[in-house]
Amino acid sequence: LLAIPEDDARLASAHISTLRDAHGSWLELPTTLHPVLETVASRMREATHLPKAELTSLRLRICHEGQGHPPHFDRHEIDGNKLVATILVTLEQPERGGELRFEHAGDEGGMVLALRRGEALLWYNVASDLEDDPSSWHEGLSVEQGSKITLAGFLYAPVEALQGHEDLGPAPSHRERLYVLTDRDRSELEDQLEAACIAQGVSYIEIDIANF
Image (cartoon, rainbow, N blue to C red):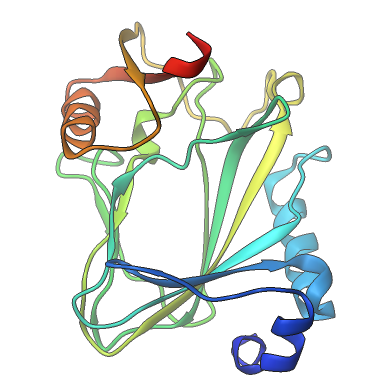
């Protein structure tokens, strides 16, 4: 797996380039790019117990010292299929830092997990009512020493396939909602609003102003 990003000829033939921002660099790797990726994707699909789940690409992310991933939900929808589950595999662990933090999972104070090389973590992004599971709000803490390389699979499935799925977490007893009109150009204020909503157990729902 670690050799794939170094195979310039293979990446070029598939028109894959490295993307970068302040939080690190990443590549979107189609599962058809290499047999190893197809095998990994197949095992990820099996792990979710969702026969109709779709996984056509894997994201390889690299974070160096001072880089991490800000708090967020894994939330997206493609052709009516929701991003229902995420599986994260650690390919290279940093010497210090880089833990995965779920602020609203587990006991008070959340959960902080340091995945070792070769370890994988699966979580579901929706609760039993098929809306965001508050406990799936997470962040990648900054790497303090060394580098961190992960491979993520984002699994999509039709909503009807999730009804009664026994692995989904319980939904909150009630949900308050904040609806925000957005032009998809994410602002710092919107980030702050979403973080405040999560802290208070309020569902933060964005509406594309172009479709309003």
